[in-house]
Image 1 (tube, rainbow, N blue to C red):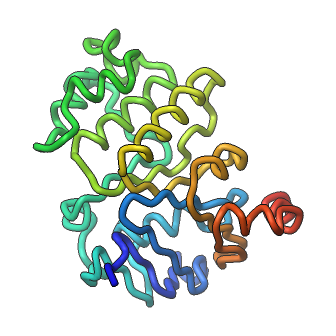
Image 2: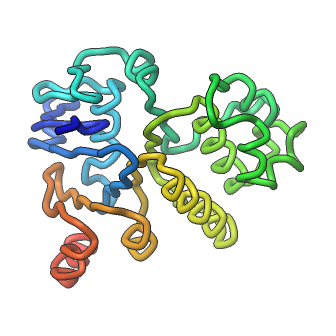
Image 3: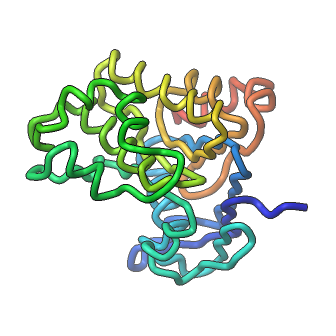
Length: 232
């Protein structure tokens, strides 16, 4: 059996004396889209940071294609084909759009032209500084920058949160295209309907614990309970 592209097993993460993650486990297979849901403060960003080595889990294990990577620095894990679109986007205010994209590029399927075709708005903004972009344009740039590293898995922490409706629509359309082309994704967002349409499997975190894990069909079978978890 092929190992998952990314797997986390029984992660426990602390911030000082505060126990934030309580045995979180998840897996993303090749070409699979997995969503991570939960109210603010439930541990979604900490899960992502723990998986990527940005925050060190006190116990548990992270594997990429079956290779244990717990304790590795984040840049070494990223070289295994994982790209992050972080919460807050991470755009440099004094770099142009072109500079962001060229800086990130690695050889592979995704090229500068391909990224600009995915987000035509960026083509019109190539000479603009990061500080001159709208929130939606910054998020498009963050996704395009991640894709130009030619990852097998892209992780989005807050894919469309805080964006104008038209920008959200463009980003969901781009994510549907990525899924159709076989790029695996782990997506955090609050738009449950969009996540259910896009994802293969879904997890809900409540106070640092996995309260639900299952397919879209399984989510819908207990939709009332799951939506209550997202509201509680």
